[in-house]
Length: 76
Image (tube, rainbow, N blue to C red; front, side):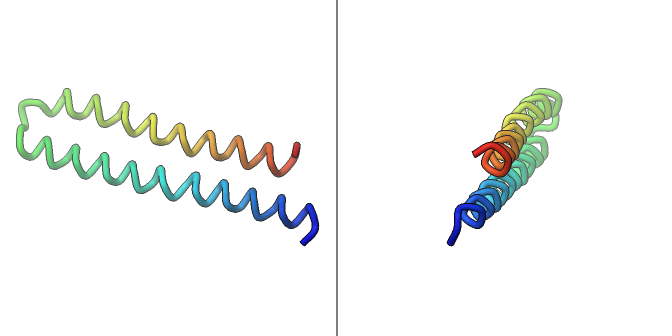
C-alpha cells in the first residue's frame, strides 16, 4: 500500500469512529433522559438541560474527529 491509500484509510477510520461512537452516546443519553423524565416529571427542566449539555459534549467529539480526519487527509 502506498502512502496515499494509507492516508485515505486513516481518514475513513477517523470519520467512522468519530461518528458511530458519538451517535451511540447521544442515543443513550436521550434514552436515559426520557426514562428519568418519565420517572420524575417535575424534574423535566433540569434533566432536559443536563441532557442537552451532555449531547453537546458528545457531539463535540464528532467535530474533533472531523477536524482530525481533515488534517490527516490534507496536511499529513
